[in-house]
Length: 382
Image 1: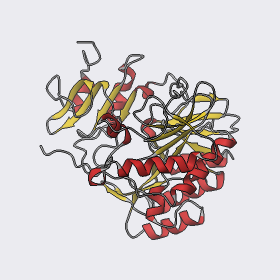
Image 2 (image 1 turned 135 degrees about the vertical axis):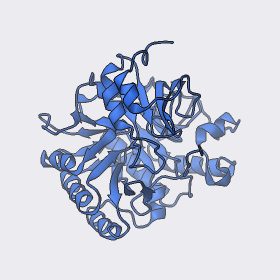
Image 3 (image 1 turned 90 degrees about the vertical axis):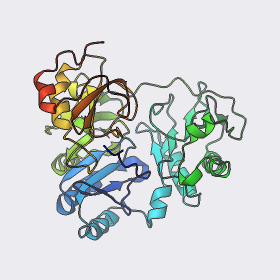
């Protein structure tokens, strides 16, 4: 079996990525937010020019699926009218800023200033990104980012290179320029050979970012659960997938929607949970204990359907446990190690325990139907 293709870049609106069900068009809304009008517009466009399915990504982006080359120009025209498309693909790629959905107005201003500074910044690797995590305590610690703006235990703003334990104190005014300068240092010091690279790996190889790193970030908060939150209502969808009808229904509530890296939407000022099929608002919902990529046929590298098996096994995952069902060895839905990963192969799904989808199988592969019919021992500690 050949190794899965690693593309090494992320799709955008102006640079879509081909998949098994058509092009994926990824939106990066300014500050990660959609007004009700924008959300309703995206829902209509996804239905008219895609297959009506959308993804919430781990980078707090929204993906429209099933777009054809012929439909793409009309989709872009509609997105541009909604204020959701950059002038060029290059500008779109530079604006890789993840803002905590719980940001204050000061955090909004900081993220906007950083995005503006990046417009004249260097061309960075596609997966390279910035996190503006300016709440009292960081909440994006488990979310991939290469350069972080966050608070220390005393509330002071610090600039920290991912992989470094300490950051450099900065003011709100100087932070955007200092962050771009740190990105330039990353490139100049050899952090992206061949156009690819991440800050943490560069630091692990011995690179020493400039600046007097002397402040540790405040103890981070764990990723939040769905349900009511002081900032609004956190709404999840199984596997981060929703259809245009669900997005349209959320738009009709009048709530602003903030994209999160936890494959949830934060609906601000939402008085009651809307009756939308597939909505996850219970922190104990078994579907929160599983991750699954789109699998076959939605992904050309997927060797089998993944989500039917994940749904069937979700009620069996014990509290505190986690199951990852992956369509190939890339493990896109959950790149980190999991207690149990079922990896699709030519001969069925092979179990990997306490590892990633690329890990070594601990037992022979079995067909999905056989696993669902007889899951005995699957979640027992060996």
